[in-house]
Image 1 (tube, helix red, strand yellow):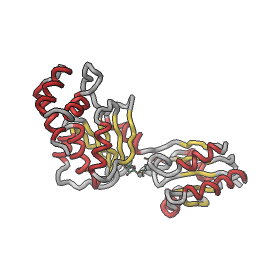
Image 2 (cartoon, helix red, strand yellow):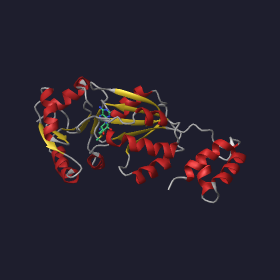
Image 3 (tube, protein in one colour):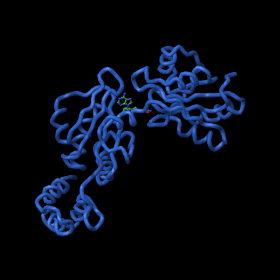
Image 4 (cartoon, rainbow, N blue to C red):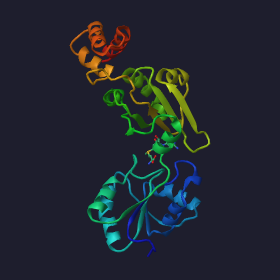
Amino acid sequence: MSTQKPALHVVATPIGNLGDITARARDILASVDIVLCEDTRHSGRLLAELGIKAELRSLHDHNERQRIEQVLGDLDGGKSLALISDAGTPLISDPGFALVRALRDAGHDVVPVPGPSAVISALSAAGLPTDRFSFEGFLPGKSGQRRKVLAALASDPRTLVFYESPRRIHACLDDLATEFGPDRRVVIARELTKLHEEFIVGSVADLQASLAGRELKGECVLMLAGNDSESSGIGLDADTLLKALLEELPASKAAKLAARLTGESRQELYARASTLAGKS
Ligand code: SAM
């Protein structure tokens, strides 16, 4: 039996660079009775590289519910456990939420052991405002659903952070151009902490041009500056106002009315209204 107290330790592991494992993470992983992980082969390799021998047990989206009873029994029996994911911080777009909720509800200790996470690593070096941000996880794979999600975020003033597959980056930039306009600042953080780490920075239109014909590889975090357009005097940003007006009016009339209400340029509002009206 381990010297650790009976608790679930939620342990962050590297997102690419093994050197990012913390001393405390190592100690905990080496001393708990059981390590829960998404994929025992993947995590077995990580622990072997760290020189740690541990009893590994799988916990993934398809068996998390069944594992809960077993873990409750382990903790009641005085065992200590750690939860890790394939990379980064468990529960951040990774399994573990149902387990942690159940353990808290049952009054067990759940102990965070912090370390790498792609969202925080990306934000820390992107050069976008970080005083307020919204982590949105993975965007839907289908364009229609993705545009719906993006449309609901278009007027959000906070920095937006998404996990995105590199295969979908081009389609995603096209949807961003439609929903956010071509000028919104974007940062793509690719292969963080790895050999080919790269930050790609520019407006949506810049990145559409510079990435055209390039196949992105590896793992990506997509970040967007929040909407900083002046709020109109009636408490709405121009896009929200135009969208509402376009439900009743043609683009020219919507732009004319929006210009009167907001004091913004009628020509610019007309251009934006035409883009918005062109969408299905
Ligand atoms: N739990 C992890 C964390 O704390 O970041 C995230 C797991 S999620 C299943 C995997 C996604 O995280 C990837 O598709 C990618 O969007 C992002 N990611 C993970 N490692 C990354 C890296 N080294 N560079 C860029 N993005 C990464």
